[in-house]
Image (cartoon, rainbow, N blue to C red):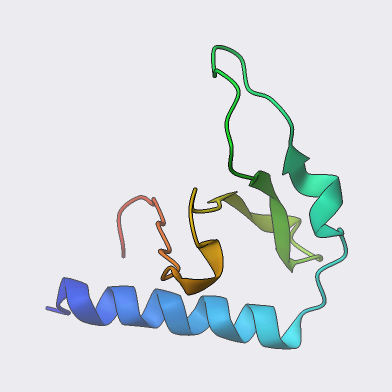
Length: 87
């Protein structure tokens, strides 16, 4: 049985390869969220959108990125992926 740590590392590697070899068509500003229902005004930027991973099969990964409130450039990036069962 594959350990969860190896699965996570594989997902991160795949995401890195997708980012490296597939062009991202949307500009980040097109994905910027200016407000969300029920969310009070915030001091950080947030973005959401889709990154195409297979144009033939019409498959894309959804992302939601939230910038840190203070010193965003020095904070680590956290990648959170949800998914179903692995086969």
